[in-house]
Amino acid sequence: MSEIGVFEFQGKRYEFPVEIGTENEIAIDISKLRSKTGGVITLDPGYKNTGSCKSAITFLDGEKGILRHRGYPIEDLAKRSNFLEVAYLVIFGDLPNKEEFEKFEADVKKNSMVNEEIKDILDGFPRAAHPMGVLSSLTGALTAFHPRHAGMYSEEEMYNSITKILGKFPVLAAWSHSKNEGLPLSYSDNSLDYVENILMLMFKIPTTKYEANPIIKKAIEELLILHLDHEQNCSTSTVRLVGSSHASLFASISSGVSALWGPMHGGANQAVIEMLEEIIEDGGDVDKFIKRAKDKNDLFRLMGFGHRVYKNFDPRALIIKESAKAVLNELGVVDPALKVAKHLEEAALSDPYFIDRKLFPNVDFYSGIIYRALGIRVEMFTVMFAIGRLPGWIAQWREMHLNKEPIGRPRQLYIGVNERKCVPMSKRK
Image (cartoon, rainbow, N blue to C red; front, top):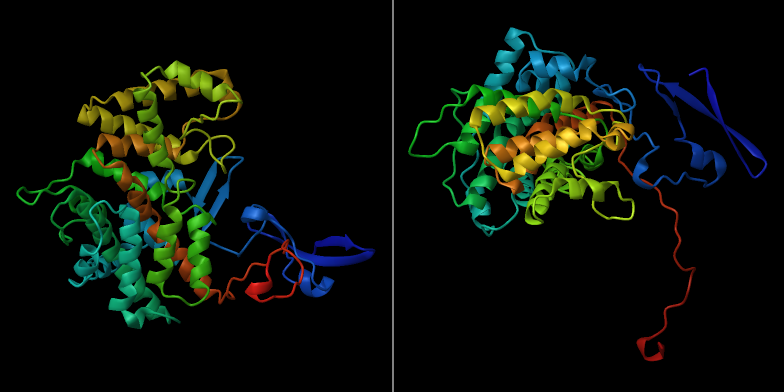
């Protein structure tokens, strides 16, 4: 911290320490700006230029297309590790050895049972309820069934809460799906690994034995790993902010689910399918919509292309693209929406307009295609995203607690009316 940042205001000079991260990112520490200046704050709508914390979990460089978890490139993790291994890495800091992994997996499986009374809460929702709303509610309800896992945590209590939420969350996600589909509720099968169990919970028909297709399992495993953590995005920041009040892990994760629900965040892959359906309903003329996308006066936008953070390419899209092709070949699905998607992909990868603007297909584009091919309802896309993001939320919540971060309390710039007197209703005009 030998560097300093200088701020001059109203003839006075203020100095603030500069911190440099391990990847040479630079941050000016303005935590004492308000006290030093007598009330001056920064204004940063959306917090696009504000670092809310120091984190050792995920490094992201949008300019270079880099994504690393605890130092490991996402490309290596997606190819060489399974989802629960990467979850352990992100949460605890290192890839587990054989004994550590076996214990972790056993503890997660041991905690996969869900209290039967949660079914009563589920029954209170109409069948048409969006599964993300159901999932958020059921996750928050876990606090009532596990009250000892609320508030401040020791390392042991933290670990127990972590294995509980990892074990129960896929069951709650599957139940929200079953409620939506009018299907009987499934329970975990501890003879399966974590991802096989998720697929079983989602797709098993009660009258038949379920066996996971290895190509589909590989694609879902990769998707979950690719969605596992993505630095301080909207839902992750929400989890840290709620957790900073010492709310329980379950309550904090519930808030993350709600934040992820929005179409500007986790709902992006759903928006891809809705766009494809719009093109089909209009007659299926892909070239027409490509022209519309190029017209700056047209409100139509191609969903699933480009990325708010990645300015060149989305490294996750390069990984999942091949799995998407493998799934489509394996299933032999005949679907007009997937045909339109292929046409759009070809255009984006060859048209100078998209190439010059770096508008390449992103992970949401390919994940939407995979989920569509598997017959997963579009409302469930974001639930699948939430299952993948769960370990990242847990890791961020745990790090926030271990760092003893203060309760989050952003400031504001008041632009309302000045002080005025309250008069009786009889005298108001």
